[in-house]
Amino acid sequence: MTEIYPPRSAKGVALPREVEFELLCAAVGTNISDKRIEIIRQWDLSGIDWVEFQRLAEYHGVLPLAARNLIEHGRGLPLEIQHSLRSAYEANLRRNLWFSTELSRIARHFESKNLRAVPYKGPVLAQEVYGDQGLRSYSDIDFLVTSADFARAKQTLAELGYRPTLAQTAAVERFSLWAGYERSFDGAAGKHLVELQWALLPYFYGVDLRVEDLATRAGRINIGGSEVACLSPEDCVIVLCLHAAKHLWTRFIWLSDIAEAASMESVDWSLIIARAEALGVVRMLGVSFWLARNVLRSKLPAAAEEMVGGDARVSAVGAEFAERLRGGVTYNFESTQYFRLILKLRERRSDQLRYLWRLVWTPGTGDIAAVQLPEALFPLYRIVRISRLMRKILVGANS
Image (cartoon, rainbow, N blue to C red; front, side, top):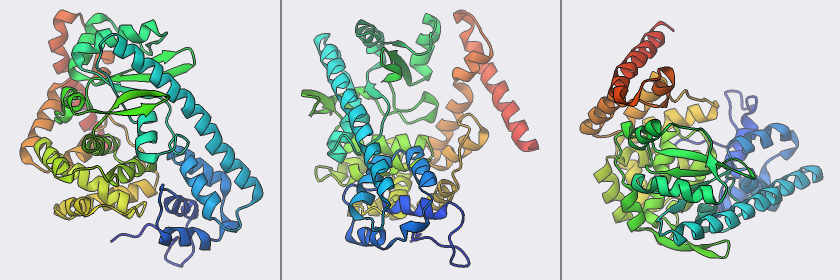
């Protein structure tokens, strides 16, 4: 089993910024084990670069969570750092309470229009999984709607003062409802505050998890004084793993979400396994659980451990991404490198072939931005897509 902390190097001296990284790993979790508490208590905090620590924590989206645990369990924490960490938690709580109230307002307006929209992540995840609106960082409200309901949902948001962040022609919007998966909206309080998603992943990923099915299985939760829809516990775990895999697990917050959601007592693991197998995303879930266990040292349910051990490739792939995470690697999500990494995450040959086929033949927003065509000629965007992919392959081969 890979150990991510305590700090280590060939000479027993922590490498630059490694101490801060390792301390952050230890401090992430809502109900951390006695062993992790003891690690935090014994940590020599005098050598911590607190500017770097807070930068890392903010980047990884876990500053409020780490702040709570360090304040409660750290020994020798400088007073000014305690104040700074406590202020970070309180500021996040105030922001999230506003988002919770806004979510409630929007959800009520959707329901008044008989629009089925399921909020997930953001306020719902903070409440359902973390049990504290101040412990999870987020910056927008996500709603799942069907593609058929998108136009009405957009109009309903407009009635509340929200407008699309990026203008699209009617033709491009229709195209996006087929090939894309989300659109962001700005409001009076800022930009990118609300997202409407009609799929969990773009079409070319080849993971056909239908929003209609998620909505049918949705439950209810109290947010901001109102009952709103929420994903079922099983769908919540799967969706969080898919979201993290899409971003190649580059931030701690997504691993924390997965670990916390997987620990909910209401989760029916037989349903998770059956749905993951049907979708062909068992490896994505396995790597997600491996990283939560080996990077954040989160305790996983036995069924999650079995998914980790059920695929011989999970540990190798997980170790690769853990090392990339440690090194702060970022990705160009339109690069051939990214496409190859996503391919490695599919366990079935049939899913790999479908992914490659759709990748080649499904134009994206970059292809539309590169060449402007009238709607009647939109099928020609497939040629644009292939041309741009070939150029990326050639550039990658020569670099």
